[in-house]
Amino acid sequence: MEALAAEFNQQVVFYPSPPSTITAPSVAVIPGDPFLEPETQGLVLERWDVWAVASLKSPDKGPTQMRELSLRVARAAQSVGATWRNATGPRRLSDPQAQEVVSINRIDMKYPPSAVIGD
Image 1: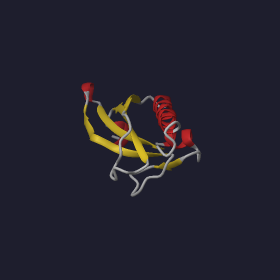
Image 2: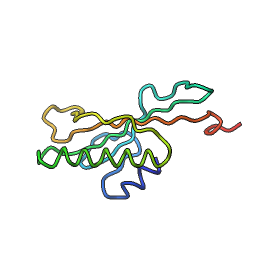
Image 3: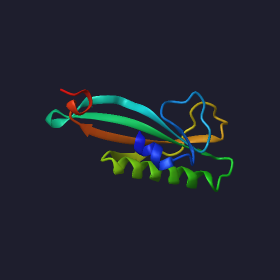
Image 4: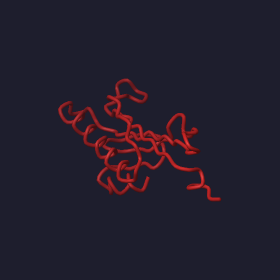
């Protein structure tokens, strides 16, 4: 989360949790589904979805903005050892006429449970 906040450093709206409404450009961090599950060798696999929100008001700039935000999400994830899996194409979250679209970036992290909860 800190790596994402640092990557975007007040250049776009950053939501560290699911927002009630979205604006563009922005980035929002949402727990993935499944959020936690067992991994090999006693590790935990934790998933996060990071929404890269862009505007389609300007069709020539929207996809470019969405790609740039997603690649910056990938860079931030990789900087802390997380795995950036992929970014979806544009999705509208509710209103089919909305100008804001979301690319969902899927991020995985693996760690021993003791790294978070202690012994």
